[in-house]
Image 1: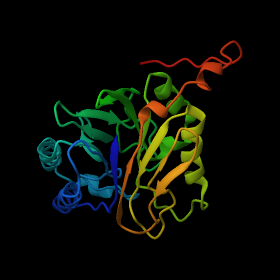
Image 2: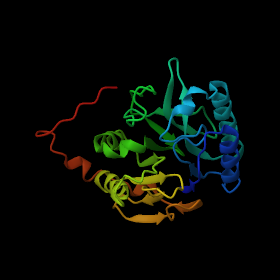
Image 3: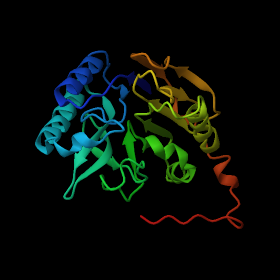
Length: 253
């Protein structure tokens, strides 16, 4: 499976973001799996006050345009966007398929700045890429390993992680270590896409089921990363050894 990760900026301007999206897809090949950061279509930042003026119609139109481009290029796209809901907004990740309707994952574990402003999701679901089961997590959810384990146990052979992590208050290397742990403890490939920013503290990279960093973009710099990986290398050896007689986690769908 060929993956193209885009470490590109997101701004509170839909037209600018769509131009960046088109620029990246111009480099994609049919069949690619293309990753963009959290908030790619709508924009995103720690300051969420632009949600007060952003146009829901423009966001819906941007999603349709992005989906059309994915079909035109015959690629699988994972990208973030805030989405209008019946009441307010959600922070979502979209899987735009070349041959089917979009799959939408709504972030269930909201960041502190999102609480009270966004509606959390309530489901951890998988999606399918070239016949292979995959799943998505967003930004702060890197701190909740039980969510990742649940998705791995649900059949995901690789995990897509989209973030907008540029926080000078975070210690260097912590979120990179989290990504390595999420891959190794679940024996799954982890594909990560973040924005380039001077305060970027989480890399855009690909980690193997053994916890090996296969490829990584320099932090703070705009760039594209291409790599081919085999989802069949994912395994269940560790997951199968869980002591459920001692610890049992119950998830409600």
